[in-house]
Image (cartoon, rainbow, N blue to C red; front, side, top):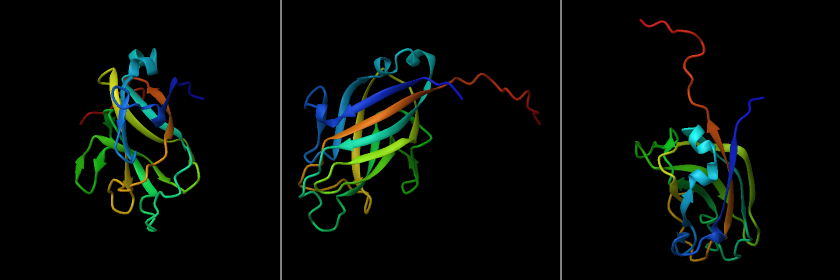
Length: 183
């Protein structure tokens, strides 16, 4: 078994207060956590590693409003969540626009009226990032699966808890398979 260092990052949207801690849009389908100190989160891993895997472990919410998605289409209930604010590596290509973007999809969710959301990922949703600054602002955006638009619901989305594991990626120690033939 390979030993690896792991840090845990737990983000609770209910902890955001307008101002310095973060911001919400009107229906809580976009929000930002301000001034997350990566050096504090990662501890000694911050100086030991240059790149990391940010792995989503689980998502939880309080019960959804019975009025959420009440237009009958369900479009505002089935969403994917994008995260931005870290310099992601190799997960950012947008095939539709044929360019790299600064966010990555971390999850898809299906909200159910009057029910809490519990979704386990067991670190299957991993995105690699490099460090470029100690303080980062992490922004979550919800998009409708049907049309890639931010939900227009007049009803607020529930508060969310995101649990991430951050795993340090060892630096390349050179080619361990011997010398390669150069033609």
